[in-house]
Each structure stands twice: as C-alpha cells, then as structure tokens.
Length: 252
Image (cartoon, rainbow, N blue to C red; front, side, top):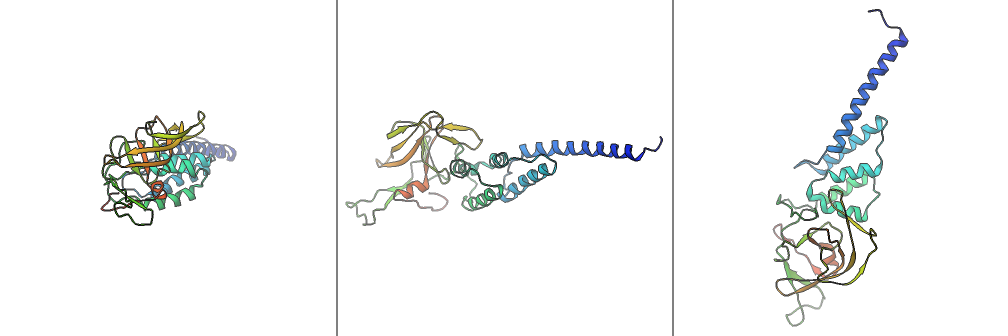
C-alpha cells in the first residue's frame, strides 16, 4: 500500500475519531437514559454518576438541558424517594443539579433504616406502617392548656390511605368527606408521581377523615386527585394543624 499523503492521513484520522465520538455518544446517551439508582447505592453516588453522563454529553457537543438532566435524575431514584419527587415537582422546580444533589443528600438522612417495602400507592415515598397515635385530648379527658392534640395512629393506614413524610400536601381520591372545596379549571394544577406521570388535581378543600376509633380529623388544604390510587396524609401538615407525630421503633 502506498503511503498516504499528510492531508489524506489527517482526513482518515478525522473519520476515525468521528466514528469513535459517535459510538461514545450513543453509549453515553443509552446509559444516561437507562440508569437507575441501585438497591443499596447512596443517592450521592447515583447523582454523581448521572452528572458524569451530563458532563460527558456536553464534552461530546450535545449539552443536556437543565430540565432534562434533573428529570432523568429524579426518574431514576429508588421508590423510597417518590415522596421527595412529588414534593420537588410541586415546590422546587428550577434547581440546578448541584442544588438537587444537596437536597437529596439531606432527604436521604431522613429515610428510615428499615428496608420494609413501601406501600404501592401513588409512588408517594417510603411509607412506614403507622402505629396510629391519635387520641384527641380535651378538657374533659384532662388535656393541658397548650391546645395541642395528640393522636394515636394505629388504624389509619389501610387500603385507602397512606402516611407520608415528603409528599408536600394531603391528597384524597374521593369527594366523600371533602367539604368547602373549590373546583379548579382543567389542567390548572397537577401532581407529578415518581415515574414522571402527571395526575390532575380537580379540587382543593378540607377533608374530614373519620378513624375507626370514631375520632374525626380534618385534613386542611387537601388536593382531590381522582386518578390517585390511595389518599395521602402529609405529616408536616398535621403538625402545622396542632397534632404531635411521634416516631417510635420505626413507626409513626
């Protein structure tokens, strides 16, 4: 074979490197879209892996938009982060990957050590089976003057409701018990579940939930989403309304 001239050699090398770059782009894109957080993998390790794909795609001349990068990271999280995902999509849209990373590391510290399976509801986060603490204290039963009610939650978790720490709001899937509600215009508000699917919110109101003990609690600002599988009781909102949530032996 005759030796190639310098120009032809350069052309040949460019073709070779272009083919390698295309192959690398294809593999990186495939890995980026299919990557999921593995069981036992820390959220920091997972996010750094995903960030590596983002950086690599930018180096290859195909930068990833902020929205796409964040969404792919969220979609790949394990199911115990589903509550975080819903809360993020409702309140924290627009964060950078580094900001999301910091938020996820903080949320990871709040997850229970137990690996008990989450309830198969709306992918609303790792749910602890609650020992329901709800005993309404009143003056007749010796309640103090603080105005705080202590509820024993031992029967509230059933096929219809789950107890969640990261959802962001109370959610119901039935209008039975929903009072003083205001209807929303179509597509005015949506909830995002862990797989990225959007579920429409049709109304917001106060939901009156009656426990087996006969006690009735009011879930204020409850979002009615009929396509959601189970209702969600958000811990922080209960606390804001004067209820005390006690965590004992990995139960609530």
